[in-house]
Length: 347
Image (cartoon, rainbow, N blue to C red):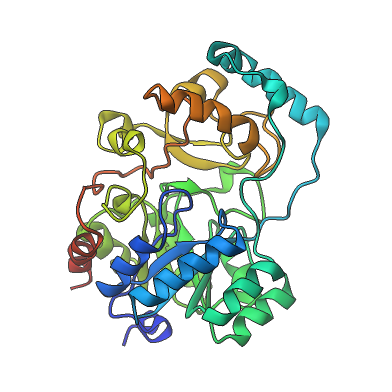
């Protein structure tokens, strides 16, 4: 018997990756009802919005579901670094005719907290997944007290061992191909990051909990390959981005289904932390990784007005077009249909 299925209580050992900013409960409901583990990202939701989405999710499915949060430490604002960042963005602001002096500072994403736990507690999530490590021990104990299964992302063998030592029930092995934010938390050295099929067997050999493969898996053949390398299950994100149940913008959808999707890079420009997206103008002109960006997630504030301006002109020049290295499975299919196609890889 697949140990992950026993742990999650799902029909398939398939997790839909939580993707903040491009989905709500609708995608998670569709995947859950198709036999996978649908996920709801909580990092960009207020407690009120979180409550609303969880209500929609629990009314839409009777099957297990996953709620995801970030576990970063909120940074102390650094005025000098913020000034360097605004200086780097000044030419874009001038072109857009916007006043950079009016931009408020602030975070676009919040870590898991007692306030979030208060909003969540009535729903007792069957599964909770975390990015950038794990919450503080008291918060983690609270989650486990609800009976929630706990997952978290590891981008190195060392991170996987750390997660197991600190109480995860299963590890998500996030390969370098994966779209969106790198889950790295023990080091910020990008040279430690390796591809899925190098990382996966090493983590499987290093830990005694189920390991879920993530990164570059876009079709049934990718699922089968991950399982052949010892994965107990897979997590798929990019392939779901063009499903009608997502809130992915028309610009982002068009980019995912174009030649542009063949060129992705890790960038810290949009949030302050490395995340994989389709290379666009701001990444080319400032360089995808800039030393000027404020600490995660403070870079978001000054990028937001530029993003809004250029998107209104029909341009993704300053938008985070998140995508993994393999966008070939990104089709405008209902999420249930895509889930069934991916599930063929388990046979």
